[in-house]
Length: 107
Image (tube, rainbow, N blue to C red; front, side, top):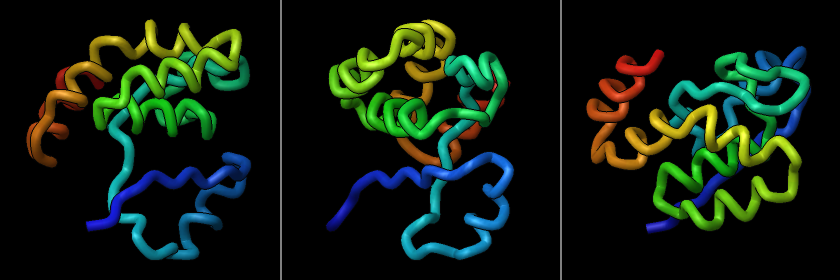
């Protein structure tokens, strides 16, 4: 089995165009989280690429790696604080239904 993470780094103004490319292997999305980056602070679904990668790492229980990645940005710790409860709930979800239930409890 192969697994991994991919981040598509593009402007939010072009996201629909990029996602329309139907890139192979893109079958899942991150659950709802709030951005902590200065451009989109507290906006749902407007994560920077590093926030998205860190969130994915945290959810799949690579919490130390997520924290280390975010430590490179002065707002990185804020991302973890702002999303502490949903991130923890998402990391405990064992299937898509549990993930969806956790997401609905916070957003």
